[in-house]
Image 1 (cartoon, helix red, strand yellow):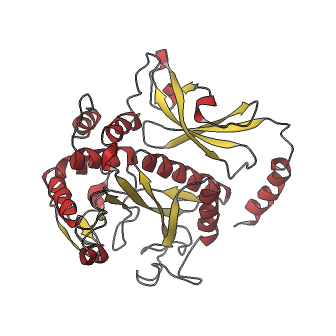
Image 2: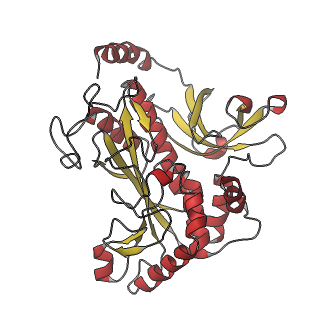
Length: 370
């Protein structure tokens, strides 16, 4: 942390400690047209006990690519809230869906359709766990901690590394970890990744739509915490060309049937279904993913589907322990670090459990991505 950041943090703290006299600050969070997070604060008169107590709000959609200037109001409908680790007290973070003024979901509101799929297939009790990889940069767009105008030693000592020169920005990562726990997120772990200044946090297991909600809030907190340290967060799947690992969002999946003895049968059936729809899934698995899924650096080729036990170079990996026990979960290694988790978990649910009437969001998105 630079001396400027330390001074600003100390200056801010005396204001954060002021008595709010019963008022509550609700930070409304939403996803814009580019898959970036936006937020703004609102004062509420008292502590919030349920999402139903939260008022709808609106914003200028013409400034976020979500509406034309002549009809720019986009409405924020709260869907979940969490304790705010930045402001603390009774202050909250409010995750919101975006809706148009005519009462229809905004074009970039992918949560709405995914939630319908999960509700229709709730008997499957589908669990997800997401492994969010990301890369840190300084304010001048240099990889954080790397030599000025040069490169660190080749990959090898950095993955789960310990010690100066092997890990960078651990202060940011530790702060983010605590912030997620304070907010009540199901963050299940962190680790330094293969490329220096690349890290990962894992969220889950979560059921259905909760998975996307929790990952988006975890991403918000990562960017918000890094902001205070003067560090940028990149979710690009190949932030640096050359012999460096890319960044993914490996997706772990299981249904109730897979988690029971004999569940390997259902895991194999699911993998077969995924193989048939490989191209449809790839379209929803993140932009610029072709730069990452090359068959090198622990990835499968984007053009072919594969699966294997303990194989990190396959599209789908079955953990060794699952193969041995005959039940559990599997990992889809294709999704990029910049995915919309609603799209990815939604199409996986659709492929494994079946499509439902009036749920055409994935087809529409596929057409736009073609």
